Each structure stands twice: as C-alpha cells, then as structure tokens.
Image (cartoon, rainbow over all chains, first blue to last red; front, side, top):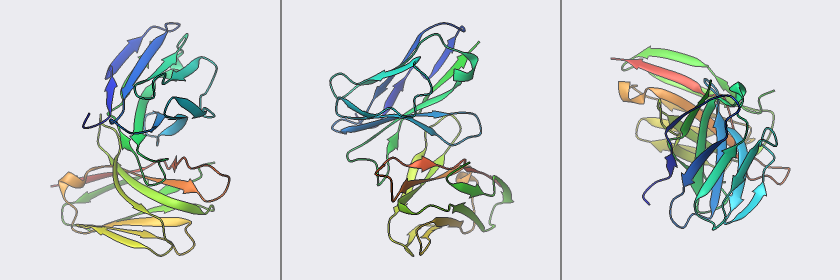
Length: 114
Length: 113
C-alpha cells in the first residue's frame, strides 16, 4: 500500500480484556517496528521485526504483550488482560532498511482501558 | 533518565517569528532523525542527519547535527500556523550495536495566526 495502515484507530477495552492491534506496513518493507506513545511523551520502542523474525522485543513492558508477523508482512500486537496503564497510542512503523535513516509511521491505534 | 533531552518542551509564538528547538544528549549518535507529529496522527519524518557538523535545509526549516554528533537543532524561519505540531528528535546510538532510534519527549509548537 501507499502508507502504513493501522486498525482499529480507536479501541476501548474493559480492564482484563484481551485486545489485538493490526499493522499493515508499506509493501516490500522488511523492517517493522511497534512503539507505545503515552500522552505528552515521545514514542517508546516495543519490538522490531525483520521479515517474519522478531529480532528485538526488549521494549515489551510485560509478558502480557505479544507481537507476531507470521508471513513477514502484516503484524499484530496482542495485549492480554489489559490494565489501565496500557492506555496509550500504539504506533507501527516500517522501513526498507533497519530504520537508521528513518521510518514511515502509521496513524496509530489509541487504546483506552476502562 | 531521558537519553535525548528536547527543549523547550512547549513553545507558543506568533506567525512570522523565528524559533529554534534543541535536542541534546551525552551520547554519540550514528544518525539523528527529526519528525513532526500532528494530533491524532503518527510522526512524519522530516530529515535524517548522519555527519557531524551537517546542515540540511527543508524550505524554512534548517537542521544541524553537532560536530560531536551528540546534539542537534531545528530552526524555523518565519513560522506559519501550518508548522504547528509536536517536533520529535530520535537518535540511533553509535555504540551498543542497536540500530533502533530512541525518541526524545518532543517540543510542542503552536503558531498563532
């Protein structure tokens, strides 16, 4: 596609509910990144894929967070048993290289846990 | 502790004024990126600088990478309301083997007509 597409744009979840956030990167981009952005903050790194391989997941805040990219294109970020502190904007970005020269971001998914 | 410190945190100016935003660190970066983010959208890449002392211009925006590759600045000449947004810098550490940029907290700019 022309850009990075994320869905849903908004998600309201009850505390304890599981959620799945989807990212469609730019076609042909081998690198895919997930970031979490709290209100008034810069994006915080969560995890990185190169094709289908998850090369870095050091930023995932707990074992309730899980990401996959099984065919090297679409990626899903899953959060189990959501907590209020998970409320944030989740951004996906892709790049043709490793991201050293910058990424293309999607518009994000705003998750609100009530 | 934030790896990248951005200042000022907030800036509210009138159309036509000039401004400079700073991005500072004690770490050396192999590259540094500047993004602009508008409400409800993801960050949009403005520029990447990789060489110490490098200066890049994008219309009314001038980006500079410090000689030691530890800091950067963004200067906007004759600001316009369309420049309003959150300006983020992101640096790729030169050491440690990571190629993943770390973001600063951003400078929120409002340009009043």
